[in-house]
Image (cartoon, rainbow, N blue to C red; front, side):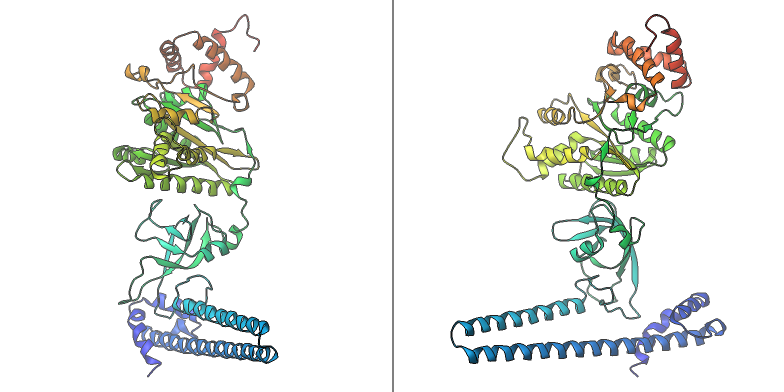
Length: 516
């Protein structure tokens, strides 16, 4: 009767399966002649074989448990014999040392007992893949998500970049064994709770199947992001798409962007920075589909998040202003770590952050106080994490790049925002300056073409193109910002591409001093 009890529990599940599914299960279990059996016979054959397997597994576990108990008792007897022998030799200091050794030996035995008990109870999943006792009626559920490693534990975030109720617990032993890093995308399995069983707050990871699409053993040999060699951007990201989209055409001429660029979009309120970000994002997905695009919105309005999700074909990661500051910092940290993991694999990643000023505000609230307060109420320790985020942008020597374009708010009337901007001023190698006065006059894109620019732009541009752009800059620099932008936009509207526009500039400026 003991063999038939598990059969009855699994028969309804088998009976509800289709014949092809039953044949597949029978093939995995090694049932002979499964292809010729009818459904009822196949269900009975599978049930009998499952019952036999359970009995064999149970017998094997009992045998191993008996062996462990025998070994433990034998070691305990040997330790007691050593203690008695040392006691008979001396009654003073040697006796004390002998008793200490006995205490330590018994303490180790108790520690081993507790370790085995925890493994049998399954409270340390994944320590030994065979150890979680999985019976035939257990169901393994596939899971996947982002690895978030905290101080003494880790989780798989299954619902995005923020903690959720369906997150999966990972022990630190599993993290060390597989070399997991924060921001890894992993897949694995968890055990589904049985009916009537008390559900744990978080399911524990049973098996790890892939890490960033690779085998876990292969993923352990990845190079660390901090050991990659950074270079100036050398491969250009062309943003020009259609003749009537002037925003990206202006950026291509005034502030060219390369793979690995660290750019600041300096903008006062209501100057059109969101439109500029959307134009850049759409241009990257159109012209450079090999780049993985991530748009990180921190402390933004909910409707802006929805608009960005619908208008951009990329990964939009957001924490709206109605969420606590801790959520803003969590989202930003996990997003940049995810980007680093992709770069370690040789991918080109583009991160658009809106905005680094609001991220600095969030860290100023969430970070522990250091006691060193700058003007504007900014804690000096709160500026390091945003700098670490922004400083991650780099072009890698042997493939891969991380491009970060972040918006910085100015002229908000807040002394704190001014201090944050001053800390980041000069840290980037590209700046795009937006002008509120131009935006108020509805001149878009409201770019200050005189103040904007890119460092080492000669690496990104060809010699002929560079010479023409420099001549154009000399012409625009002699004008006021509004007149310069209006002249540039007027000339660009009359051409279908930047190449045609530059050729026109070359012809109109031909003459003395045209030797480049």
